[in-house]
Length: 127
Image 1 (cartoon, rainbow, N blue to C red):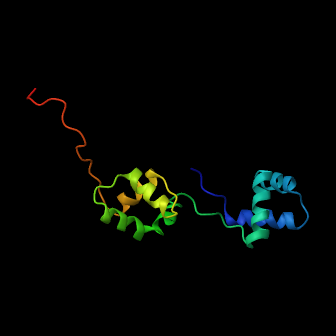
Image 2 (image 1 turned 90 degrees about the horizontal axis):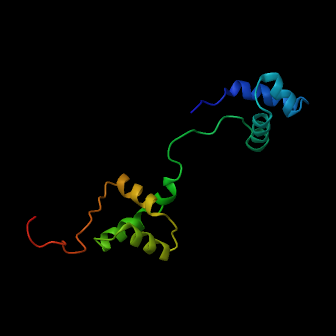
Image 3 (image 1 turned 120 degrees about the vertical axis):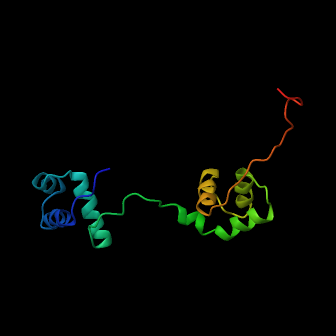
């Protein structure tokens, strides 16, 4: 993944647009796309700066972490609950999530789920 362009360049491009240049003119002058100039200008007007947003990393786990106490209490109440049952129980409480995000949540909290034997072995003798 490439790194974002410098804040100095972004500020010079936005100041050119504020001075009266179009996004296409400023982009051609500084060697960046008109779409980038447009985004930076909009960000400057909206937020007052042109710093790039953070790149990479987990950006969704805080949503499920907000319900950590509910999830952990459900896991404790029903000792052998599977992910789909946990997802359905949370949906009954108004929390919408997926089984994969629940799996990552449990891994972060170092909670392991063991599969139990739900059926008898198909053979009774040694093979």
